[in-house]
Image 1: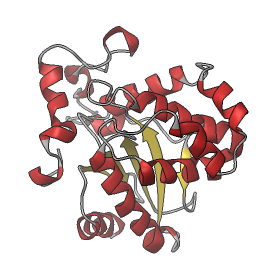
Image 2: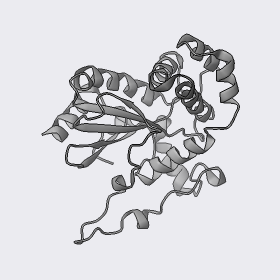
Image 3: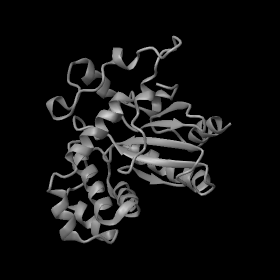
Image 4: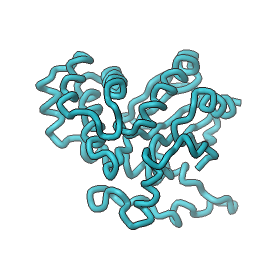
Length: 239
């Protein structure tokens, strides 16, 4: 991955996923569509240039959750696991980034799901909960729900599932409607597609982001980078 520091992407958080893949357990087995094979991802572009997995990332669409100016020069599509402690840390970093770059209209943040169920069995249901928040209250409630969940979860599968409806109430959603949505299965396919998108784009763990510049150039943000490290990458992309 794009020269991120090893201490920001430690084995307990996500790198162990690479070992699971090597062992043949591409973590979702039959529950999730298989990722595009590496030899398919690396087909050459016209002219002989090697294609990058980053080029496989799904374009932003109506189902995405976007924070910031839709016309911003740079975009960060971030795959997250809501029980990953490194994602929790990087979420705070991104909130700082949006205070500076988002309010200035320079960066928009797109949040997608990559629950690592082999590590965090509760993460998929939490991703569904965030989608239910969006379904019931729109984009604003999605971001409020994710903010609150990251605020109260200790990470590493530590959040009591009974807190999910409480978070919905906290952000102003109808608790009964939320519970009905959570048990409906209506977002299972969307989460599976998001997982496939992450893996096809080169993700082996979380947090994992694809930073897209004004001319469509792409780079990776992988691991819980600090604010200065993230800022440096964004500044370079905006040059």
